[in-house]
Image 1 (tube, each protein chain N blue to C red):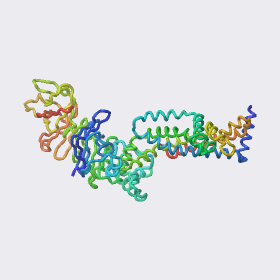
Image 2 (tube, one colour):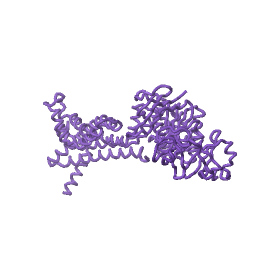
Image 3 (cartoon, helix red, strand yellow):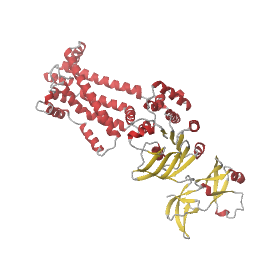
Length: 338
Length: 234
């Protein structure tokens, strides 16, 4: 069952289209990561999913029903969904009263509110801070209290806007674990935006890549700036003056291309028998992370780029982090984005 | 001159300590009209300022400009207009309000309504927009969201209300023109001080001046205490 379906959704700010989604859906009970560079529309999408701002165009379906954006209808729907901001703001009162807020507006009586709030604070390890002034907490503590405040509302959907982006490593680990546990134990649908590929791999069953307000499909993080020129009747995108990738679109001039991680080959430097060795691009392996059955490889070729290998390929190649390698691109690896 | 002032102060002190009924009735009338005018202006001005701050509508800038202009509305102009409406020949003449404390209240409400609305608007506009989205995402309805924002803007709003009270308790034009400075009925601290000054009697005027400054001091101490108790660590 689809929890959310977005059809022809567009969001426009100041005459500029910041989100353009012909069709997108989110499954009930799943966890999903929204990946993409700054300004790609992740936060805008989360605000629409949280029913905080209506799209300029298109329809949002929630539980197969089109959302009625009139104020009176929204409150009951919003009570099923909670958004935790990247920089959550606390009401100027104590921590526990902040956590109780969602329960108070739902009309729960004081004793029960306090009990639930304390339970949620314990879950995020902040029960010792219950009677402190909330605005005196650090960034990481604020983020944890914001999660407790959201949990207290017993939502069906939790949305997180870059939950670990502005906290220290210790709090990152705690927050990641809380989100993972919440999704696993309570079956809450979790949708979060992040720049952190590792975090997305750990927490999300699905990933959606956004770029300039559009879903770019797998590999959306491999966005490279370049310039399209015509050579021998073909359109070629020149990236960083040394990499030439053929594209199908008939565009000329500056552009951004997306490179499919599955269409990148990696060769260890020792394999000197590769026939077209000179045509390969040198790169360095920065990071290798397990992602399901595959190994995700982060390469530095003067620009970070990701590729995917099967576990078997990785084992056979003998490549480890820090190795100098050569990479090549299969036909159709580059796709014109804008 | 110094001796005269010192003597007036000593006499005024004696008058205050002897609980002079005339003096304290004047203080009572002043506090009575100022309290009700501030209360009514707050009940109207706070929601008005809040509504203008949080809503987007055509002509919002024009409304704000009008409110800002009304901040400089002279009390004598309000007195004249009030007189025109409340006198026997006026539209509301049948109510017989002219030269009553309620005529002063009406005039003072007109005077400070723009103050309360403008400063509430300013206080609410300064509140972080995330409070609104946070309240909404936590399940608050439109009214609950509004109350959450007002709560966050409470110090600014309280300051606006206290400033408005300070404005009306110290004004003279409306109290004189609409109240008529009737002894034992509509005589306020400021109108009494003006009268005593005209008579060359400074003792009561100085005593009332002391009370006026004390009221202002008490209001400011109250504001400081509230902000210190709840807002010092913000």
